[in-house]
Amino acid sequence: MNFFDCFKPDIVYKSVIDVPFDELKAKGKSCVLLDFDNTIGPDRALEPDDYSFRCINLLREKGFDCCIVSNAKSTRSAHIAEVLGVPCVTCAKKPGTKGVKNALNMMKVDAKRAVMIGDQIFTDIFAGRKSGIYTIMVEKYQQNEIWYVAIKRPFERIIRFFGGF
View 1 (tube, rainbow, N blue to C red):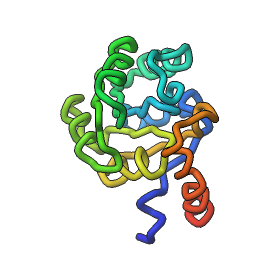
View 2: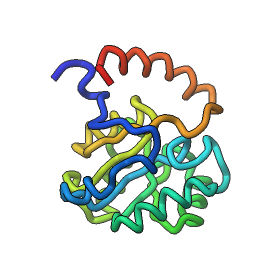
View 3: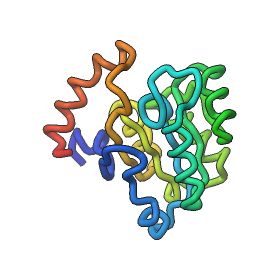
View 4: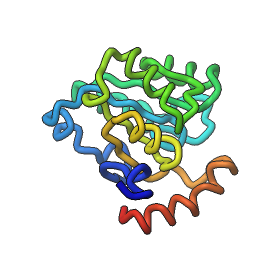
């Protein structure tokens, strides 16, 4: 395993809607762990938007259990999850694995049957890889994002270039 492998998602798609969930189901996947900010909703949003509902409804239609795994503060992410009708792990501290493992326990699913979807290499994908979960990176949902995420994007581009994804 080289340096880039720990950051490399199993596959990359433009958006959550583009993911072939039927193929994942056929491979034995049953649960999707999702980041919220800039993955299925606007960065720092206080409420889910139409796209957020579209993503969650698609997952339900395809027969997946889903859980939001967010580094955001508990009040905001818990509210969003409640409105969407899904469980949530807040203050997940990704790229650490504790929040991801809490989500797996909450959902009563083994890592081999789970999928982690997110827009950031250094948090979502790295946490999923370290947890032994199949990882899917999606492009960020919107251009506007908080400064401490924006400053990581050039480093992500370097990792993607040298990692071949």
